[in-house]
Image (cartoon, rainbow, N blue to C red; front, side):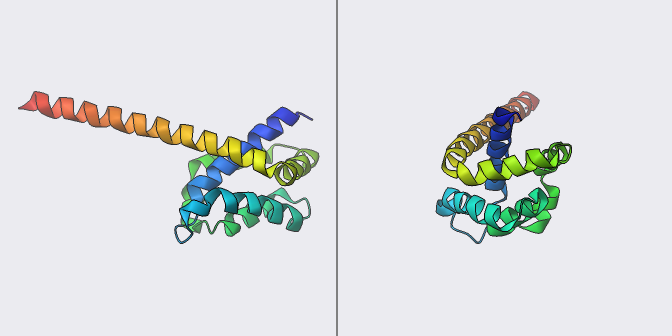
Length: 136
């Protein structure tokens, strides 16, 4: 099995969870809750990765509408569905065994994605400002 790819997928999954973290939860507990959820959900899912994902989303109190509309989660699920059961089981084991490492890496990825989004938004705002300035 490709352990490196499995680790990358655990990090991607947790960075997506950060996007979907429930609005009624304290954002200061985001990574603590995700990390604890990895342990709890791994223990409860019996090796079923779909149940694991569902339990994680419930644990972070993700809004079902936001979950259904999240393209990153949809793409991630599509890619995971092609993996064999042994791969899913190893994925769940990694989530439980290395939850702190995963949270560190996922937070780094999430912050990088937020910075990238901010850069794009700033470029779009600059382009609009330039266009409007030119219209005067």
